[in-house]
Length: 148
Image (cartoon, rainbow, N blue to C red; front, side, top):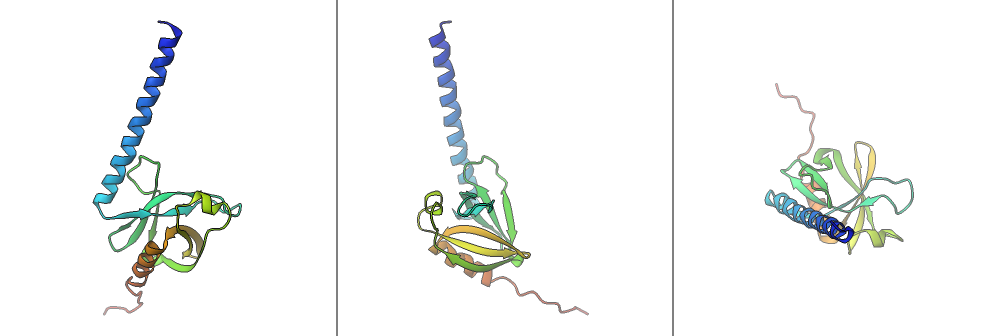
């Protein structure tokens, strides 16, 4: 086998792998959408440097109880992060600044939330933010009543 034939076979195999990966991403997204609509949701996983640490992804409300976040380029059917609605509260929102404008989805707003005393940053568009706030406000009110 000549060297160029081997090179051609390697390139063809790599192209097939890239194609299979792309099909896998599309199938995964369809499967996630089957259980309810998904929306563009980015999450800041590291906040050591201003404007850095963002990973684009998709979000999905799971039942009435939690928000699931999936990495966009992962093949895993399981969410990377899950936030329970009763532990999540809206703090503020702002427009992206500097490099954030380049790494986030277009028209994104950065939303700061508190989860069990820890601040997290999410990025979503204005319409998604309205739905997110309504979802948070419609949660059951915690009570400390004792049933006798």
